[in-house]
Figure 1 (cartoon, rainbow, N blue to C red):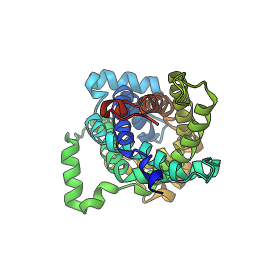
Figure 2 (figure 1 turned 30 degrees about the vertical axis):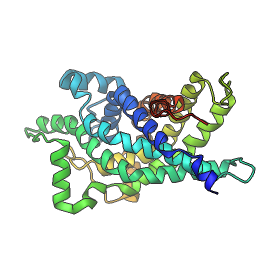
Figure 3 (figure 1 turned 135 degrees about the vertical axis):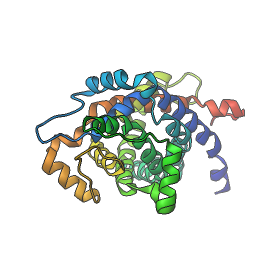
Length: 310
């Protein structure tokens, strides 16, 4: 048993996850901002919308808020993405390792269980990170809607927002939407990790005898698995985004919980509303996880720490 424990190096896996997260977020954050804007906008009584499509949203945000406006909320995301991705990727490896059968195989159900447990572990970081990020990303849309009716919305920072929530509601104020975040992230991980492992195992191996997949195989496997899982759980992501949006535009509906959000979105906006930002989210998640898995499987941390990969 002692030998089994010592053969699993957790620290480099955490570092790899953190490095992968920072690189991935920096590359895809503008698309993530557009995704949030699309998911949060509600159709007016006469069918009016601020953004008609992903391209339209991207163009309007860039025109109205500039290049740096596309990165609004990125600071909190980059700060917290390191522990979030580190927990997610390392926890999945940890559970996959310890859920192996006696003959060192991992049946599909155990792969899904490992992924689900990894998704469950990450919400301690993901929930406050997403809550703060969404407010910052959606601030421009809310402010623009307010200007149309002659009102102004004061600017705020993620720090001010976090302190305000903490003062009003305590630490639980930062965990608004935990149930919806759990629903999205556990479901995503149940789909993503087994699918990635399956696709990654189909590709050619490196010539160094390590048995690991070649660079492009890990990257493409991460892209395909990530985009597939992202589309599958997009309805949960829409509900989570709506529930975590503290500041609404004039006349927009609020929701009392997950069930209430599902019912009212379906009633007033139809089933297609659950796939708002779906294409954008797929474009975001594909390179994010492709980059993450590539950095992770390249073993950057092991090289930095001088650890020989097993």
